[in-house]
Image (cartoon, rainbow, N blue to C red; front, side):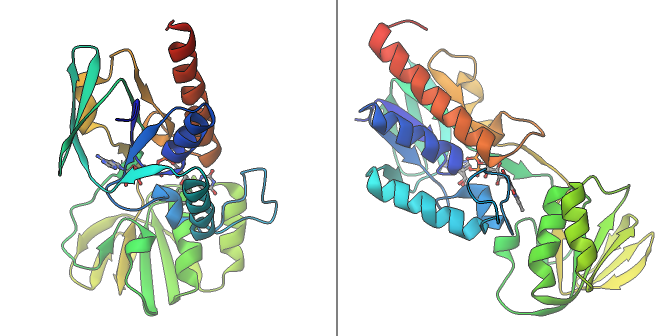
Amino acid sequence: MALVGIVGGGIGGIATAVQLKRYGIDALIFEREAIGGLIRNAYSVENTMFFPDGIKGVKVVEILQEYVKKYELKILYEEVVRILKKGNLFRVITNKGEYTFKYVVIASGTKPKRLNLNTSRLFYHVIDVPEGNFERVLIIGGGDVAFDYALTMSERAKEVIILTRSEPKALPLLREYIKERKNVSVVKGQVLDVGERLAKTTAGNFEFDVILVAIGREPNLDFAREVLNEENVFLVGDVKNGIYRQTALSIADGIKTAMEIWRRERYGDT
Ligand SMILES: Cc1cc2nc3c(=O)[nH]c(=O)nc-3n(C[C@H](O)[C@H](O)[C@H](O)COP(=O)(O)OP(=O)(O)OC[C@H]3O[C@@H](n4cnc5c(N)ncnc54)[C@H](O)[C@@H]3O)c2cc1C
C-alpha cells in the first residue's frame, strides 16, 4: 500500500504526487470525477509564468495527463466519503472501499455556493453546459469566474448577460476582454424569481437557454472534519486558500507538502 493517500486529482493533488514520486515515495490519488479538477473550466490561463500567451484549461489537463503517465501515478476513481484516525495511521473510506495510509493529503478543492433556482437549465460549471449553441446565456455573479464563463459562452451564444448585484470584482484585464466581446453585456441587478426559461430580476426580465451561477465557492472538506487537526494530514490548494484560488498556489502547496513528507520520513521530525 502507498504511504500517502491524496484526495483530489486536480492540479494540487497531481503536483503533490509528482513531487513525492521524485523522492521515490508512492502515493495513491482518489478522484471522484476527472483529472484536472476546476481548471478544466478555464477559458485561458495566463498567469502560470510558463505560457505568456495563455493556455486553455483543457490543454492544462492534457499536460497533467502527461505527468500522470510519465510518473506512473496511481489514480483510483472513487469518492472519499470519510477519513478516520486508526492508531498512527488513517483510514480513507470511499464509496467503493477502504484504504490505510500514514499520510493524507487533502487536495479536494472547492464547491460552488448555490442558488435555489427552479430550472433544469442551471449550471455551476461551464464544462457541464450541454453541447450546442444558444440564443441567450445568463451568468449570475461578478467575479473572475463569472467573467471567465462569459468569455467561453460568448463563443457559443448569440447573447450573454452577466448579472451582478454590485460593481464587478473581476480582474480588470478580464473586464477589458469582456468589453471587446460585442455580444456580452454586464447588467447590475439581482435575481427575484426564476422559471424554467425566464428570469425575473431587478434589472428586468430575461429569457434564457442556460443560467450559469458563479457567486463564490467554499472548501470541499466535509469528509475530512474528523482528522483536520491531526499530524500527517495536509491541506493543499484551493481547499485551504480562501479567496486566493490560483493554480500556481495549488502547485506550490503540493510541492511543499511533498517536501515536508519526505523530510518527516527521512529525519523523523515534524
Ligand atoms: C473559470 C475558471 C477560471 C480560472 N482561471 C484561472 C487562471 O487563469 N489562473 C489560475 O491560476 N487559476 C485559475 N482558476 C483557478 C484554478 O482552477 C484553481 O485554483 C485550481 O484548479 C485549484 O486546483 P486544486 O487542485 O487545488 O483544486 P481542484 O481543481 O478543485 O481539484 C480538486 C479535485 O478533488 C476532487 N475531489 C473533491 N472531493 C473529492 C472526494 N471526496 N473524493 C475524491 N475526489 C474529490 C475533485 O473532483 C477535483 O478534481 C480558474 C478557475 C475557474 C473556475
